[in-house]
Image 1 (tube, rainbow, N blue to C red):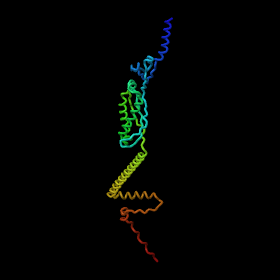
Image 2: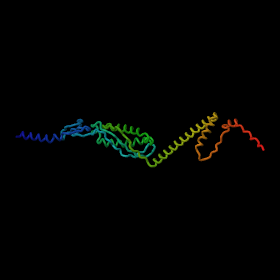
Image 3: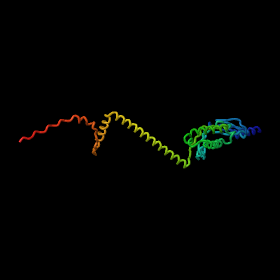
Length: 261
């Protein structure tokens, strides 16, 4: 009878403790095993079993995490106050260090990102921030990744999202852009005038060396004016055009004979 009681107690304990010790770790997670507070290894993915009340497990997500860095008011190298925010893409590559060496790896990465963003913006001027943002993104990624690497965190991408400028700076930049457009327009106009003058000089040289060219130009002008019938135009003709007619005059007819009475 006593052995039946012992078997019943063992079965009851198995029914209580076995389900409590069975854990399922998904594919994108790893379990950091601690036995009486001491690290004993990484488990998963799949079904794992731990000793209840003796072993504990800390689950770590290995997928890429997106961290939104709040807007930071920064002062650039040329003393311009801007408001900048960013986004950081990171993931856990060493679950052991992410559990043991840092209390909250997500919060720690976010704090490092904020301070690094302020520092990098403070070392850059306004033109670099607006025109070469990709270089700043690479510099941010390298600095943040170097600082989070001991925690088992890999920062893959850092992107500056928005840059808000003061209203006075926006007006100054708009005036500068307008002046730049006017400058380009004047340069283009002057270039066109210069090319036109060059073409006129070439045409004048051709006409001065080739008299026939001037006559052809007169004839072309006459053809163009002939299409307009709404006005009377007096066009001077050079004597050279009618010199041939003046040299070969038509004979004058003789006078009629006197009438006879």
